Image (cartoon, rainbow, N blue to C red; front, side, top):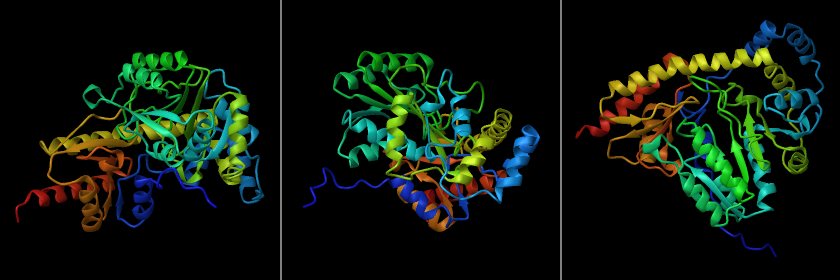
Length: 389
């Protein structure tokens, strides 16, 4: 007899919303990354920065055997990923099918160690949903909007004192695009050390900073850290479905073993193209493209907010092609998003998917003309809601 489930299945509302509608609307503003590169554009960037490597890949791509590759990622790929983390060992890298699989295997392994988790909220709701679906307990630690979406370190300490032994940190944050202040991050790490707790650091938006230096990784700050990342957001390569977990070699072995039950291996083509993308000079060119898109479109987005009067309020994001917008209109966010989809063929993410009503997450990584048109349609719908007729 099958044992009863500890909880009813909790759907991943945002992903189900996006997966259902993102290819069925004229303008998709639900994404949080920049407009994706084509394979031709990626190879062209390689031609400029690593011509010999790009040439070899061009010559072999059509003859590449589509068999199983190295199941934790090719040696070259893992060396390039490890080089992004000070003092990292390539044996501490597990390449995965996107950041989602990296988060999954980290959660799977750490739930065996402790069912008590804590998470900074709002966040990408994959891990909180999985914790609940797999029978764990979750203690929320709310980021404070009035303080720039920052956590109170005392609340993190209280969660550890209450028994949480794993903390999920998404930095830079999704949906707000905020980065954690150094002093608060130091305090969080100190709390984790005191309680010998794990930190799972989802760093998928690192590298997509609008201004300033890249967001520092948590890798190396505490011995119990698993950092997850992917090529989807900062790199504009979500279709490769290539992510990774970065940790110590012993934990990496355990995470790798769990991929035998999930996807077995990264796609061979994705591994090859990702290896080129992470060649140091090519990577720099890709991230420069991302920053250029972010800066241009952030200004366009901000002008739209300013032109909307007192309809919206928000904190400009520090990283990622996302803005978490508070709106001042008497309509629930899911109802608004559904009307926007049906009546105007534009997709955004309702704030209710993050547990914050009266908000929308709007992506601004689209081509400029498409972004302008999508924002204009949002304005039109808000105006029609306010019209008594």
